[in-house]
Length: 111
Image (cartoon, rainbow, N blue to C red; front, side, top):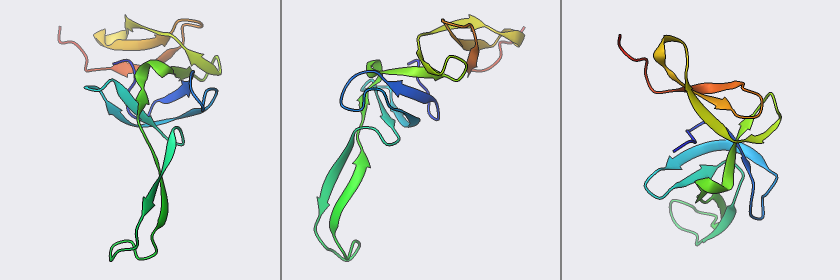
């Protein structure tokens, strides 16, 4: 999957379309990501010992990973990414628009 935890992404479809946010969780088996402040739903809670007041609890729900683009700080928008071999043989994600590096993936290769 091209998205990792703590990446900044831009939502490209849906109700939260032009918004950006930080990835909280990645669900690779389902192909989904949970983004901070995006796709919020309300869960109505009955008062209990744990939650004495009850009420509406707001939380983020997963969205499909194909509906987000990695955010490039240099371009200031969501961009398509590519992978290339960086220094020390590490894989690096890069912005296809400007060529800016967007972080490394995995560990360095042994020579």
